[in-house]
Image 1 (spheres, rainbow, N blue to C red):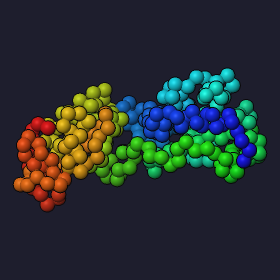
Image 2 (image 1 turned 90 degrees about the horizontal axis):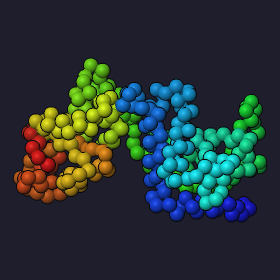
Image 3 (image 1 turned 60 degrees about the vertical axis):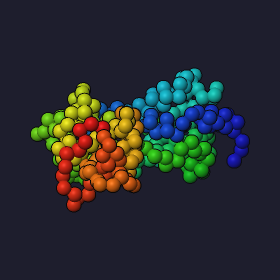
Length: 295
């Protein structure tokens, strides 16, 4: 493979950015969520989008990645990275990037994600003539050859994408949560009642509630589910400590995790002291008792 200083400069620029992989993942997750527009539509899956909307995900990714990394627009291509012209390419399938005639010979930032597998990849390659397949398409767009894919400089490869929770729930659980006959508040109650021990992102709450005040519904759900022994933990105050002590994932900012708890006689592993009393996660055999009033 012959040296390509321009490619190397652009690649090294991205690799020098703070939390680069996480920021690409956040941009892609946000792009999916904004196109789903779950708060207004209740959608959470690519299968629910029109063909035009699926195409628009690529435009969203291009816009949000540019904003996330503070990139200037190029003169010929989408971005200017370390002074190099770079075209943004999106495909829902790895290797499916379509290179138009104007991008032949140019640097391409190739991005893809699999929402069902919760992974994403980002790489950069120079789309040279010898790395492109022949085309029968009317618009003359071409995919990379196996050699072109081998020449990819990967910035992230099958990195973790924040889970699309509703997509991954069993059908019966999802249907019980998204029941059209329930109010927004009752759907939120169902969400935290039926989905425990897993991080629930703000976008999931908005999709389930389909209301502007979705996060307020979470606060109300704490009171509604307390008699059932369910706690709902966020990212503030004592909640991260309690989550860690109970062996739960610690929710990032703007997300929550729920669990049913019971009092225990002895503080020890997987127990959390709340209000001076040790609590642990309940098992199916444990009787239901009210959760702590304040935590």
